[in-house]
Length: 232
Image 1 (cartoon, helix red, strand yellow):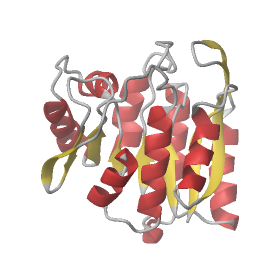
Image 2 (cartoon, helix red, strand yellow):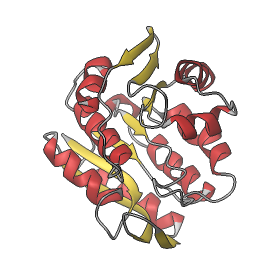
Image 3 (cartoon, rainbow, N blue to C red):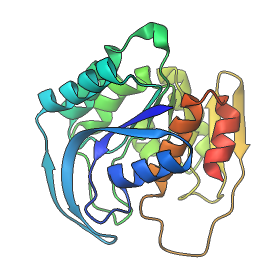
């Protein structure tokens, strides 16, 4: 399956489009990309961010889709509200009959704590991108920001975002009391169990998870099975 990552570079290679591409290949897909921004980034800090022209982002998606075609898409770091809106416009322009699954990883901060989204990004996600998503994969902190609820309750957050925006939601388990992911879709809530590894090297985990999920969905794997395999 042809899987596009609409995201940003990480010069250290642990996250961003390089992590996405490695995960897509590992899951059996062919990686394509549309860059939103470029970062100077290591495992511990983000030293610089340069957003690209939104018209260039739009053209990358349209040109690739018209020639090669897309079986799945994931969005990652988009840097600014304008780029979030542009990504949404580009994805909305895809042929609806092809029913391309879209995984939205709403990247707001790096694992180092550095902000990766300009002010207004949360509202741009709510207004433009989440309604287009097949599934969104926020971590606990991102889910709290998007839902506007300061509660350490992934089930509440997943259900709230699903009801508001219509997409399935997986609140990933990296930051909560439990290591399990929490999935809410039209069938209800389910926990996706997993193990919390005793190590600090989690940089890029969200990129890897969402890219694997997008590749499995692009291959036709049902959502709940894909969520379990991506968690593993």
